[in-house]
Every structure is written in structure tokens, then in C-alpha cells.
Image 1 (cartoon, rainbow, N blue to C red):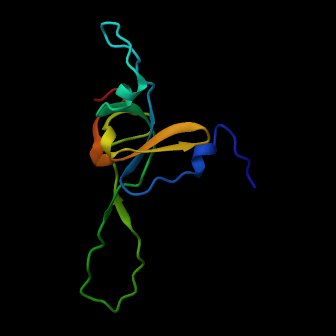
Image 2 (cartoon, rainbow, N blue to C red; image 1 turned 180 degrees about the vertical axis):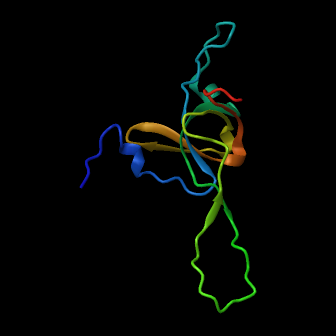
Image 3 (cartoon, rainbow, N blue to C red; image 1 turned 120 degrees about the vertical axis):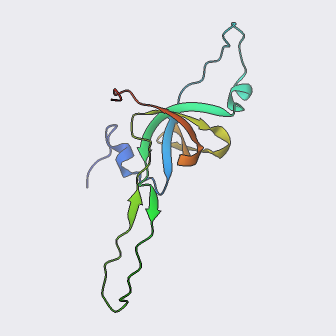
Length: 125
């Protein structure tokens, strides 16, 4: 049996469907003018940001229907991949996020449709 280390602890997690696992950024506790915000105000923000950790396989695509039902076919599900990729920074709607704690870390799971914008570090050409 393989031991769980800090490097591979998230490899056991499988994100399903069109969902994305995000590690929220620590929100700033100060406004631009220098006012301190209590944690309850920060948690109520509608739009949050975080790092994309894992991505589900995407939207399932229905299998084409054959006119020959007697043929044996292998039921292999195909997926349309998501736009989000591991390592992206995502802006997402907080109201659709499901918060969870795993191995002492705080994460959220959001559907792809709740992600408003992605920032990718590689150059887009």
C-alpha cells in the first residue's frame, strides 16, 4: 500500500462531472482605504477567488444511437472537457460553492457554470 504524503494526498480525490476543486485565496482583511473588515463581511462577498486544484472530466456527451440494436457495443462515456485547468486562478460565485475541509485544508467545490473568469499563467498565443 502506498503511503499518503504531502505530495500525493490530493491524488486520492476524484472530482466528478463538471465540478472544480478550488483552494480559496486568503481574502484581504483591509479595504483599499485601510479599513479593517470583519470575517463575516469577507465571507458574505458574492465573488471569491482561488486556485484551481483539481478538475472533473467535464460534461458527459450522449452516445450516438445506432439503427442496429443487436450489435454489441461497449458503453464508453465520452466527456466534453472543462475550460478550467489545474493551476488556474478562478473568480467564482460564492453562493454556488460547497465548502469542505480535507486534511486540515479549506477547499470549495463549484460547478463550471459558477466560474466567472479564469487567469492562466501561460502565454496565450
